[in-house]
Image 1 (cartoon, rainbow, N blue to C red):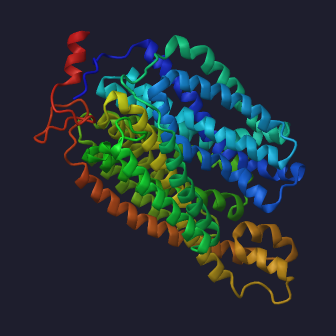
Image 2 (cartoon, helix red, strand yellow; image 1 turned 45 degrees about the vertical axis):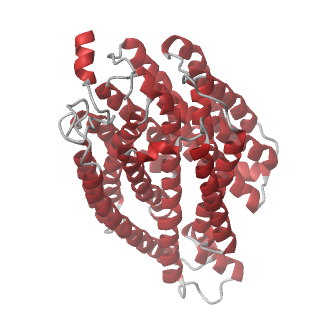
Image 3 (cartoon, rainbow, N blue to C red; image 1 turned 120 degrees about the vertical axis):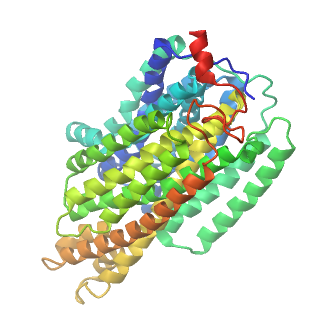
Length: 529
């Protein structure tokens, strides 16, 4: 049982939450803004095809690889200290990225940004668990935090489009500098320091094993999205899984492990992680396909496409804030299941979108999808962090972030590959026989390739490509709908033991989001007040 003193947060803590949300918004924005900057930087730096892929992927690879390491490192050296080190590094390396003179320099900078970003994500979430010890306030605070990342992703196309309209491609990276400065100035005043007692020795072998376990798996997932289950993809996956087994075995033997595998024996912790992982698969795939649909099928410029993503982002924000409030009266498992059921409706609506013009239907459907995302991001993350003791909050936060990163990557790989397979099947035979081979190969590979080659093909041909891509999206969304409906049912079952947030313990001894076995922190907070 946790011995943390429960008290209600005041103005300082809520101000600290605003500071902690800034880097979270920035990390989300950094994911999408580069998609807009890529054509301009490609013209300037002239990267090869392989270098272009690494410019895009190095950031995500290194974030995913170092999350567990950085979550535990923060527990040992101090979570605020690690956050400030990471923010300073992120700001400095962003300047290097902005003024990169070669593709190699930009790849190195993006890799360093990934490592710095891995210090920010678990540190912010773990510090929230320290600042908000009251269950109800913590759930609401995590709802705000969970929304910040998606808000950054939604702002990416809009902010990036404005920056690129007025400045060079590197300006998109400089957005990190003022955020880093604000965090470094405000953090010592608004954010308390926390260091886990008796944290023990930092095991470098475990760090190496975690990297060799995670990085090949992430690589395999991303490669699968582009090339399917070829030999390198399968080999990377097998290597990653083999080292994952070695990593888990070593953690089980250490007195001070990098990741306490005993956390997985808590059924709330394991169930919430599973919901986050599977739930993010549908979101990752739909985010990719809807963005593609808006830009290539509907023909919207990036800024306008980003604006259409605003209403779904608003619904996600409302769900992330409203779900913790509703979970004070309704068990979290029921709240998650209900919002996932609404997401299923959203996916079904997306199966009805056609190439003739369906922006309104897309926005409504994707808005319902985001509604479910807001609920599972807020409540799922809260359940994961709340199930861990305070000294393990950094490690638990890192696991929450890792499974979400993996879920998004799997969504892009699985649903994106399914949509691409349908596109290639439908477009086969539609490309004119007299088209040059390189044009036929490019147009037949993807919708983006078809858009770039459309001027070299007969007028009106691109309409066939739009219809083929829309059919692929429709089928992918149908698969997502079925999986999400199953997940909604399973969420109600696997989380049925979790009582309302801040409520009395249930018969199993699991109360609220923490799964503690005695005491009511809300009442304790009231008596302290």
